[in-house]
Image 1 (tube, each protein chain N blue to C red):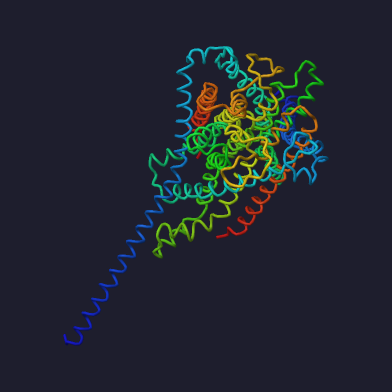
Image 2 (cartoon, rainbow over the protein chains, first blue to last red; image 1 turned 90 degrees about the horizontal axis):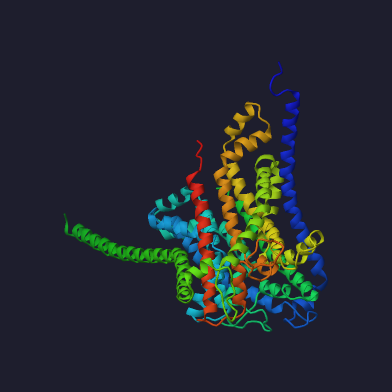
Length: 291
Length: 320
């Protein structure tokens, strides 16, 4: 009598096991392959037109003269405003939820609410911005309206990152400070926040890097695609890098496609810089966190 | 007690009363600033609730006015979406089918590749490789969607044209495929979390019974992590439904009730983007269509997100 699972079956089972491993590795290779092809494609299309004139010119009807200046300034101003608005709000909310709030139905509701907000499509935030900031508050299609909309979009990300960083501060630090008579705010201000800061900053930078690439909410609030000036106040109309890229991609002429690719290169380099900064901060934090 | 010592005693009491009064004032001031700070922090947390309330109120109020002019029945049963025509029709089906079709194409890419990548990361990857590959896959998720749109229109579509000569420049297939690669890291990362939550002892038990690694992965680990994996798929589907830029750039902006992925079509998100680009006057029916479609989109993604969360909570296996 032959035992079930003789040599033939054993070989088949082993071959199947190797096949799955190869298939799984293949999926990773395909994913990364697409990333490489995408980057190579953009580089090939856009490197030739990425010149100083391109960076230092305003948009134009002719692609040879069109440039990225208004978009770069728009994105930088937008980002500074978004950081100023969303950082204190996000950290404040995180401190409240971690250090102040009692476990109650209300806290639970706020937590579920934040998790759901993180999954709301970005264009819906655009509609919120259009209805509330552009129309109801009468800010028009201004830099400020764009920054407020974008801040609400990235707030859930900042809050979640800040909460994790605050939670990582050991309880013994707080207990030590309380034992010396510190008040709740003194504990937060002098002990919890300084220790959680690198983690909070890393999360904030990653959230801001997402904000630089976001296009849909700015389209919904009606950011302009043809802006031949650098905005001078927060109430001025503006354009941003992804909006300008979108505008150039959707034109039929190949020349505009090339400068769209140049714009993408600038955008990706800026995002890469942000991510590198976040990685450096994270590394420093890991070195310091030997308490 | 001598007069002298009594005087000394009195003055000490007096001084300590004075001192305790100052301490009391200080404590009161500290109490006040503490509660002011607490209130300010509470307001920060409240912003997130106000955001949700703002979204619901904005969408609902404009959508309400829309449905005063357009029958709900027409919106939900109509097969034509031509709000800008002289004789406008407001049937959402062309937008809805395009949205679901493109999201389904994206899932057809992201689901197998994402799950396989998760299996590799969780079960096969050597630690050093995992530390390098995982962040690289996350780069794929961090690429701005407008860049994916560029890639779909100017690289993938010309490539597809070589195999499918009948395909037109703006088509659902290219947008869906590229969107699949965009959400792949999300599927991989969330599925990996689910796989890693399965305890070692289950794997070791299966190995002890003579199972191969394939049998352990497919018959023990994946079934044990199934609720987490399905929840990840649903969340990724919701993400695909809400994606805007890839479809706006690459799928064409033509409301088209068709399931042929080689044709141009318009999703709900692409409609919102297209119309809001055109500077619609406030208070017109056209302006309100934005919010009617936005409401449908918001409800659809909300249901998917809640379903995903419920699955995770309801069917989570707790191992001790």
